[in-house]
Amino acid sequence: MLFNSVEFIFLFLPVCLAGYALLGRLKDHRIVIAWLVLCSAFYYARWKAPDLDWTPRFLLIILLSIVVNFICGRALLDSRSSGPRWRRNSILAAGILFNFGLLAYFKYTGFFLTQINAFLGSKWPIPAIVLPLAFSFHTFQQHAYLIDAYRGHAARYSPLHYTLFVLFFPQLLAGPIVHHHEMLPQLASHRIGRLRARHRAVGLSIFIIGLMKKVLIADRIAQSVGPVFSAAAAGRSLSFGDAWLGALSYTFQLYFDFSAYSDMAIGVARMLGLRLPLNFNSPYKSASIIDFWRRWHMTLSRWLRDYLYIPLGGNRKGEFRRWINLLITMLLGGLWHGAGWTFIFWGGLHGAYLGINHLWRKVRRADDRAPRAGRRAESRPANWPAHIAGVLLTFLAVTVAWVFFRAPDFHTAATILRAMFGGSGFALSSSFGDRDEAILLAILLLIVWLLPNTQQVMNRFRPALGYRRARKNPAGILLWRPNLWWSTSLGIGAIIALMHLWRISEFIYYQF
Image 1 (cartoon, rainbow, N blue to C red):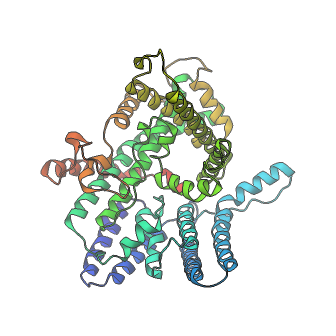
Image 2 (cartoon, one colour; image 1 turned 135 degrees about the vertical axis):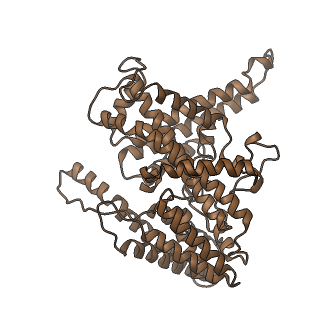
Image 3 (cartoon, rainbow, N blue to C red; image 1 turned 135 degrees about the horizontal axis):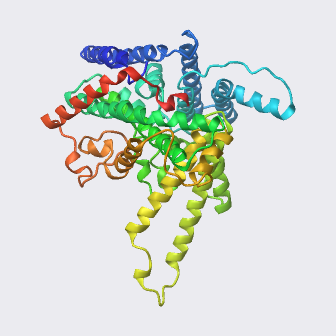
């Protein structure tokens, strides 16, 4: 069941909200939690794998994962007060082995067997294993809980609360990767079940903004992506215009698709009076790769930092180790996205970007500390030209990396990149688009660079966890207010988006 489907918008969501409001009057928040667990389980069970009839096993797998992790987490919390250290270590190791063993089986078995066959010349059969939806997301979420329980940084919660923490449907399928200290206290609060008008208005507005991004922008621009990458995969020669049309179209498709899902997840949760963490914050406005990863898939970046990069040593053991740790972290981040060499290369490329960015910052800091005798302060570039140059360079680097992220193999990526940088000349004409496509790309570029994002538009109402409310109005005249103008505008936008629901498409991050 997709957020951008008639079934979700007109059936599931109204029933969920109505039951939430009615049961909330009983003054027993456990009943409300049980209702949300039931809704979330039904929502997950409605998914059908491609070319496979639905079976209960996918829901049973995630429920088994929840039970095992809850038991391990409770045992780790109990063992901190008594019992030998080796017992805690054994429990943690068992939990990690269970989580990543399941993830490796479902997501990477085919990839690893293919590589072994290619390397050894063997003919091991490749099983047709279907990856359960959202498996990577809830695995990372529960791994963080186990680690924090081991460290003594997690609290005790009931099995019902923990189940909803993992299974909560707005964030289940494509994130954000919610941390237990963000969600579980909200679920345990006595205020759960109170369906307030302000929450409904703010949440519905954010949801409609996300729906318009998905249906009217992401799905529209996607029509230029497939033909270009398919042509490159088939060995066709691409022009300069062809290659840039495909690369930029995918750059914006991914941006608006992921931004749309993030908005819609935050919006649905807010209708229920719950706040999810911010996961997307205008990443194409970044003036450096470091800043980009503070804005793109923010909860994944946080997880990689806290549970991989820092345990590896972070920047505590010198610059060389820092670069190695960055590279390892990003390589594994790429592998998390998909079982393929292009994903791994994409992660390694961003690891190299980050290493270069840190080196550049170190050089700049050394330069700033150097004596300036005989130098005029005006000789250094002004802040705004340097910022614009940083944004342009970061955007170019990210776009190049997205080609590997989207391409099915290195040959396809190389074909597109060769054409992008003049390998087939510099003809601006394209066989896959016309002037309208170029105008649309230019408009989207202005939107992502100049317009406020959803969080800034909703600034007055603290739309998500982790968003710092700006004292100065960041959205100008676009600042959201519960008034007639905004109600009418969003109502018209919702009607237009709903009229396009006939071309329903999955969110890109569902595949990860």
